[in-house]
Image 1: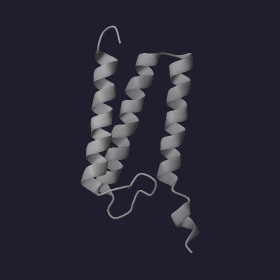
Image 2 (image 1 turned 60 degrees about the horizontal axis):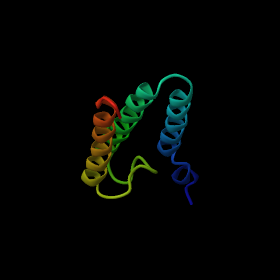
Image 3 (image 1 turned 180 degrees about the horizontal axis):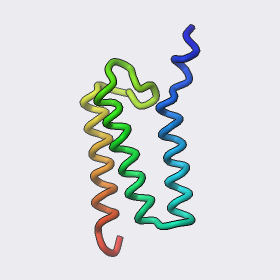
Length: 87
């Protein structure tokens, strides 16, 4: 058993980013937090697009094109909601 396989550092980076985004949303500004969340999703999608196979572990769930499409769609949706007045 390879211990590196179960560490999933990319997953922990995404979790740390979400915790930081939550803190920014509570303490600093909600719009900034939504932009940072969208950026986190874009970075996760880019990492999934660049790395092959089951890498990055914790982010790679389905086929690469499905993962990238879902992450990009979520980032776009959050970006649209963040830029819509009154939301």
